[in-house]
Amino acid sequence: MKSDCESVRRRLLAFAEGDLGSDDSREVQRHLDSCGECCREVEAWRRDVPRFGDVRMGAEFWEPREAALLERVAGVRPAWRRWLEALLAPLPVPRVVALAAAVALVLLASGPRPAVSPQSARPETSVAAPRPVLDFDGLSPLSADLG
Image (tube, rainbow, N blue to C red; front, side):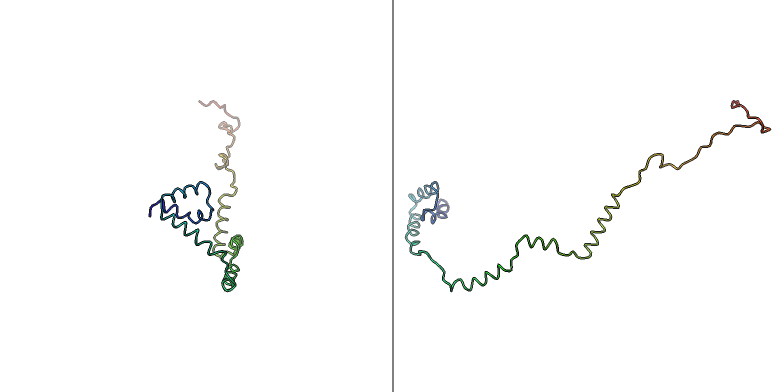
């Protein structure tokens, strides 16, 4: 089978029923004009599809399937509800403890620290005012010029 036939065969039923757009219909018709095999297939579709008519399944078909479908649908919860249940589900105790420890560690590590200035970092030393040098007898101060 040619690659042209493959691309056209996917659209043959829609072409046979008149459901293709104008561009696609023209493309399929050009192919059918040159390909007898695909042309016979379209003719078979046009001949056989009307024989099926409006096929409807009776109650004997739907009754057993309906119960199974209703069971499956009843068991399915909407996605938003599954998401909410997962979000609100209780966490296991070790996870809660680990989360609390991590939060406490972050708070302690990033909490306020005392401001440290260069003056407050050094220990305080008091410098006493110089005492006057006294004379030998201790009564009169000497002059500052000793040299």
